Image (cartoon, rainbow, N blue to C red; front, side, top):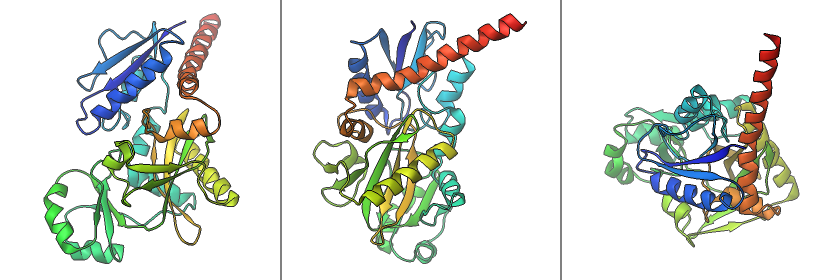
Length: 312
């Protein structure tokens, strides 16, 4: 049996720390079950001593390179079997505007949006019809998300948005809902309740800053509805194995799709492990199930190669 190579770190300064914590946590859970090795990448490239004949891969690099399809493409080129979505699905889902277009085509409710390209405050305010949110269009983990209530808020931060790829959408009021996916099936729904009302990067990764209600205290109809929507988006985007989707539940009982995460965090405050635990899947079992996707892919690949060899 091949060993498991866990990849963490990478060159993303904004999400490197979380990736290292995820990698260490998963390594500790898996090392008692199988042979595994933890790699802490310093740069955005594969480790030189990583061998596709000896290892399957559990990538846990967040943000740029790790979630935008670059890492997955390198793994595919090098012949690795790995857990998580492939390069195409990863690239699509890292781009919030592209993913929202897919949701719209499915008839799923999502807030109107525009990409930021130097508009002044009046233009953005008129577009949104009031307060709006500016966030990176191609990053994860709530990095750089900003609520804009007044012109002063915008002008104070305008320089921060002069470079990069940003998306603007109306600030939606309602309850924050997230749905984990495992093997294409929705896990119990979680409501996110930040203690001061805004689920930003600090609230996501600071212990005690946010309360998580699982299962979410919403109706059974709402649970089934958002789970079905999540599975549909996950499948249509070509995702596989595991992921997480975020929504706002408005006062009319409608779910507004926000974004999809193909490489959710795997630490104590992470949402996917919380959802799995709510249906009796402990953290070690969750990690093993995710790794087993890579092992199964490796097994199928060997069988296909054997069949080709016989035919030839």
